[in-house]
Length: 153
Image (cartoon, rainbow, N blue to C red):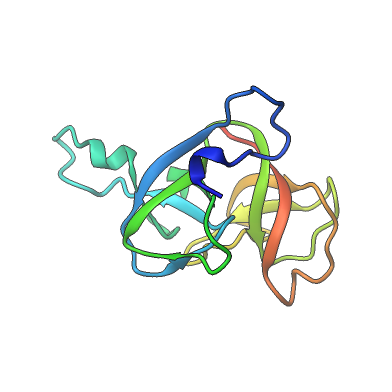
């Protein structure tokens, strides 16, 4: 499905989805629901550089507070970078799909991003949302999960 036709789960018909086009700088294969962070290191601190607002990378210890959002609208095999992607905007609260590696209980499991992982994990890190479905298999095999993205980044 083309990225401009993707409907974010829970959005009402006619409601504008909160999606954003970004440029992924890495070389990994990105799948739907992968967490991405802005690369705020682009350019020099004294320069205005619009790439800081549109270039994303894998979460790391340097960028966890710069959560951009979750990849969406990709084929099931994913897309290998560097490339342009559409993300569910991390600034806007909404229901969407995340890619988790933690057993989930509906409305209980909190989802975090952590350094060096595209997956949403449990326990500690930067809190980004909560699970909206139960799935006891995600602790052994990572996969997609319906979630509520808190927004505010």
